[in-house]
Image (cartoon, rainbow, N blue to C red; front, top):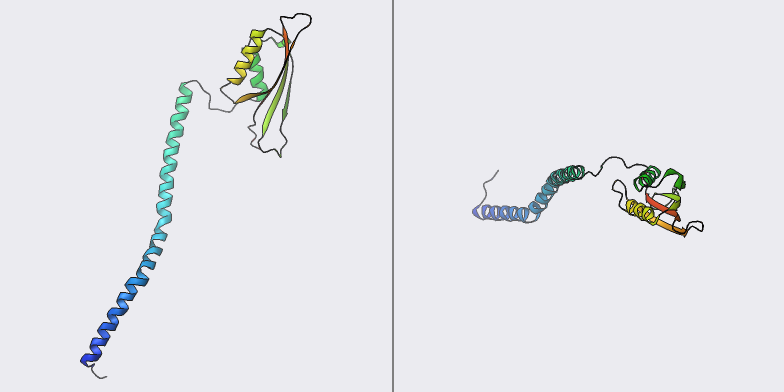
Length: 174
């Protein structure tokens, strides 16, 4: 092999320098970006884990607060059982409850709802108003009045007959 002349050495050094600069300028940012993307999922997973832990802690605090206030966080009673308890709580006697007819929304419905139609008779206005307040304020389950029909009795005008239809989101989940 022959030795390189000064001119050839100079061109080899300049060419190598240009190649190195091109490599650093164009290829290195792409490689570092790929390395960053490879590190990204673990950083994202760590962030997600921290967010999960924060939400779990908040959930536990809310659950403890609810229990301290006497709010149940367990399984909600069936809608019929809830309505039966609310009639007793409203001082409505069993013989004043003509019927409680449960039904539910069709399986293809957007929201799974449960309905109960309660037929009551010989109620005072106080009993009926207490009952409606108790239904709307029930803490263990969100119950809303869908329909209300009230009729004054002909035999005793101070008493009322009522049909109350309520609904609640079904725990069946669809």
